Image 1 (cartoon, rainbow, N blue to C red):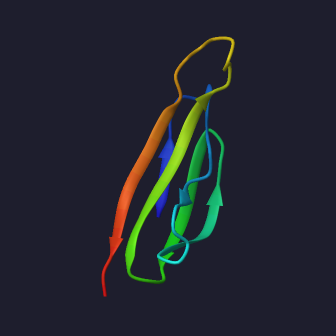
Image 2 (tube, rainbow, N blue to C red):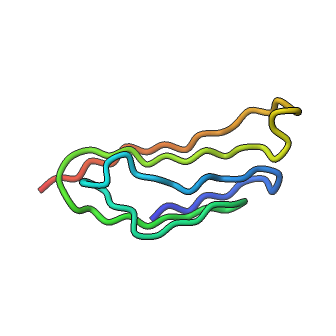
Amino acid sequence: DVKLSGPSNYTWTEPASSEQGVLQQVSGSSGSTASASFLAVGTGNAMVTASDNPGCYPRCLAPSRLFAVNVSVTG
C-alpha cells in the first residue's frame, strides 16, 4: 500500500507500477492525497512512481515533486 499527502496546493498523480506482471495495481486514487494498493504477481523488479504537481503550474514555476520506490519480488 502507498499513501501520499502534501500541501493542499499540490495534486498527486495516482501511484503506478512500471511492471504490472510483477507488481499489479489493484486500486488507486489521485488528488491532494493519493493512494494505491499493489499485489505481487510475479518475480522481478518494479518501480512505483507518482508526481506531486503544484496547482499554479506553469505560471508559478514551482517544482513538481516525485515519489519513487523500487520493489523487488522474489520467489
